Length: 111
Length: 112
Image 1: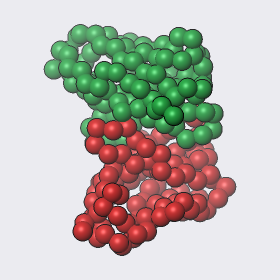
Image 2 (image 1 turned 180 degrees about the horizontal axis):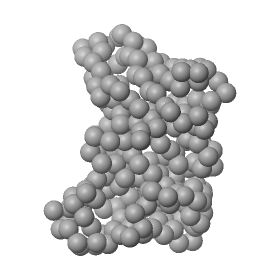
Image 3 (image 1 turned 90 degrees about the vertical axis):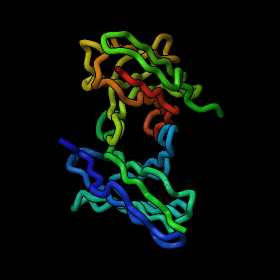
Image 4 (image 1 turned 135 degrees about the vertical axis):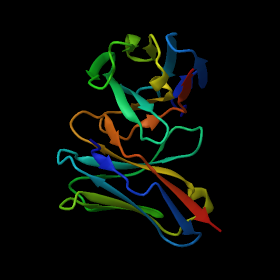
């Protein structure tokens, strides 16, 4: 039973345009959500997070939106750059600090 | 600031053999995690330590997997005996309480 779902295995976006990555969750006990970026042969790198008491958090080109009623969050990257090509994981935390991850979305930025 | 260190980076063993992975977290981080990432999946938490005590090991297959964190710093994860389905990347992460987790580069295990 997947508690964190990323339904798009891959996404292709033109350089300079907006990338929108989506994530859905089922567990109402999750209180903190994070996005990680992963390059091949490296561990995931923290990107941005949001508490369940907020609906938006922004950090430079990255913005995360949380819709609690829909149990949905999204990561917006504007503008998209070639270095953004990577696998992006949505993760959620509830109770203890261990994270529950989605399967990831492979973002490809095309020139 | 030095990151999370893991070794070895790659390991190939035959089924029924034993294997051990080592992790050195970021200095001062009290919480340490081991995750298993199977190809095409997201990381799955195996065990979480707070200092040298276990906080959560509910998803650790305890019949073959074991982990320890002596003196609340370094940690080792062991698999004995290994099965084909244990082929995965084993990720170690550390964090200050309630902050984001920092991951090491992982150990890629192949069981033949």
